[in-house]
Length: 245
Image (cartoon, rainbow, N blue to C red; front, side):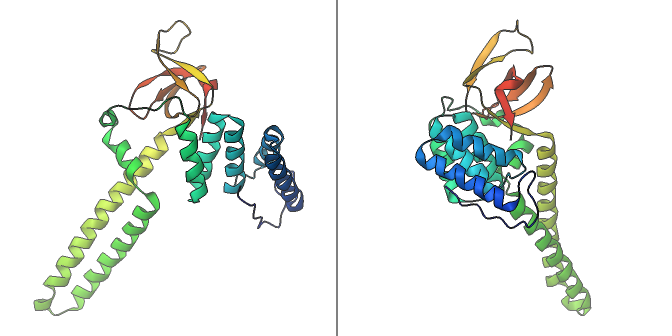
């Protein structure tokens, strides 16, 4: 389990810092006693009070995994992963994924190129590289401008190359932001759920999904959501079956 580090001096929702720390400790103690239901309930209280930091999310996901609640385990561990690169999060996620019923295989090329690019791109690295290349390119251009006319070419070419790279990186970052804005990721939390050909109880079942599977929500219609699997299969399932990350 990950320890909670509280750095806020103000109250956290309905709890003071001391109360939140005490509740966190009680949840940890319950986990180590094997009382997973109590541990989950106490971690969930912290979550509902606005304490959705990596420590609470990781411990809640780990407790759900120990209790056999696979959908909740992957949901909270995925949320923790978005906030932290802790190796323990990745390790527990790997264990949880191995327990999934749905081990999706198929042709991912059917997924749009822009979506695959967004998935492959490290947003923070790309953004930092873009800013660095942009300023370096303009710096080289400024240096070239100060040189004598006959000696500007090498620096000018270098500036052009770096600025071209910056433009490519900037475009990739823009595509990533656009795709992420449109795309809603979710986790199947129901033990199993029918995926239908269209949104309606009378629709034919195309396939089933099971707890823990990570999907994308494409659109919503009443009590149904259209989901896309990692292998690009799509269909409609109940809104109660999935929870957004």
